[in-house]
Each structure stands twice: as structure tokens, then as C-alpha cells.
Length: 117
Length: 115
Image (tube, rainbow over all chains, first blue to last red; front, side):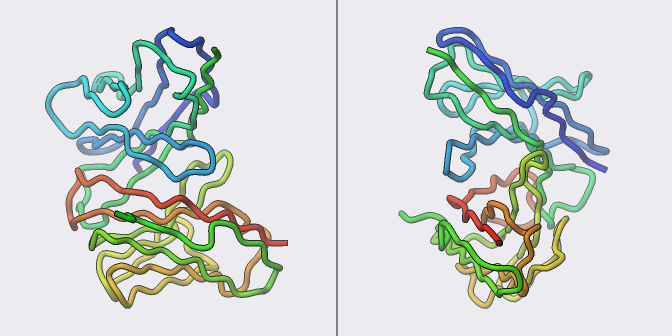
């Protein structure tokens, strides 16, 4: 069965420092991977996705993610954190082995990013 | 461009009452979804719909009913609310069918409290 793990409930980083939010996945077929961000009292906003091709994916707000097939990881990164990046981040996966008609995503439990000024 | 909206944004109800959460999207997306968000569980899929009059169960459908008579609306009904259904509910939509790459777009959520 497909699954996603976000091993850290919270990540703390100082403003201006690089940040990494970790995500690992387990699927049978090709993985299709997504990152979403949730600001307080808001819905989830799409950040970026990996479908195929370049392992480094660039997304919104200066975020990027690196797909690593051997480590089954898709970590979210940003070179220089901002206080406004503080939010809840979700990784999600879709398994390419199964029929795409269901279009279902499996979400991780989320990682709270706290950026200190 | 309203996108995807949910109403109400906040709801308090009592055990045993029927509650309907509304979801409306203006993109004419084929797919719509209902998730619940709970601490320690992330987002879990309740029901989804591939088109008008086509719905199917997700991971946690018990206690919920959905309908989709129009493409743009996807209401979620709790027929007899229980305390375990206290949660934040998100509606989402995506453009097409049978595409692994399609992005889901989320509404702002409804915070439901069942007393």
C-alpha cells in the first residue's frame, strides 16, 4: 500500500538560514509527489510536484524539492527561510501503478515549520 | 475568480443532529473530494466524485453521505453527528480524470465541532 512519512512534527529554523522539511514515501509503481502548505485558518495551497524528469523541482515562494529514488525521499528545501514561511507543510503521493481514474492522493501527517526572527 | 469555496466556515452542533457542509467550485473541474484533517492523521479522504452523479468512498466514509447533482457543487452531510466527527473538513477539486499529474486545489475549510 502506498504511504507517506513526515518524520518531524516540527522544524525550527532561524530566519535567513536554509530549511529542509523531510518526506519519505512508499509506493509500488512510479511515485507522483506533491508538497502543499497550510497557513493558519486557511486551506492547503499547492507548492510543487514531481512527475518525471529533473530530480530538482522548483515551486512557489522560492521552495524547491529534491526527488531521490534510491532513498525514496522528496525533501522540501529553501535556501533562506523567512518568518512568513512559518506554516504547516504536507507531503503527498500518488502511486502510478494503479489506475489514475481515482486520482487519490495519500497525505503525510504534516510538519510544522517555525521560522524565528 | 472565486475558485473553491466552503460554507459555513465554522459550525457547532450537537450529537445526533444532521449537518450539511457545502462546497462550490467555479472552475468546472470534473473531480471533487472531501477530506477531514485531524491531529496526527494528516488529511484523510472521506468521499470523492469523478463527475456529476458519480461518487465513491474514500478512506473514512462511515457516517457521511455525499451527492453531486451539479458539477460545481459537492455537499457533505453528516446524517447523525457524533463527537468523533469533530474535525476540520476540506473540499478539493481537480481538473481531469485519470491523470496522475493533476493537482488538487483546496477550499478554506470548515471547522466543525460536535458537542
